[in-house]
Image (cartoon, rainbow, N blue to C red; front, side, top):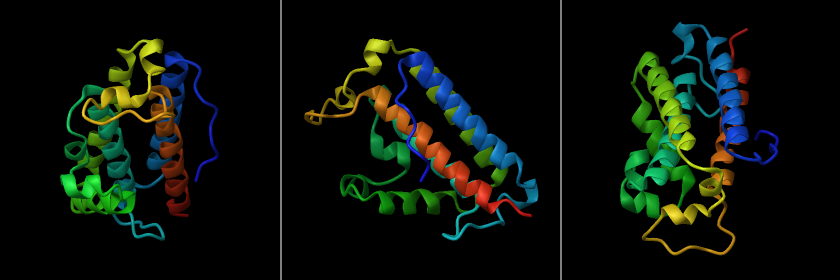
Length: 173
């Protein structure tokens, strides 16, 4: 996993760090020849396109959270799978859903989803981002120590960096 990054100080810092991390993902993707985006596999069997689809799915989850829309739907999983809180099972469903989707479509979806998340975060104030993220889950009880929205979105930086490292390791010689 990527080395833990410093907690962003505010919205501007969060957005800058998220964009820098995503730009690294783009660079790692660009280093793979286009014909290899769905043929080169990592040790887990994932392609470059699979990694991009995975990152986009979890960015959609954050968008759904911030908009107050159904979280399972954002990931393309049924409610039972989502409520089982088994990240590996959720990731398996995300991975299966991206199978056969062309790399071009996956890349366009990834770009659009990232832009949507960045635009949505831009609409929040620094104070909004310092609220516990459970504030955006009206039907779920808050828990003491819930991470703030800022911390939750900062995890995106680390998640993208983790997948960037995996892509760099996949790059054909």
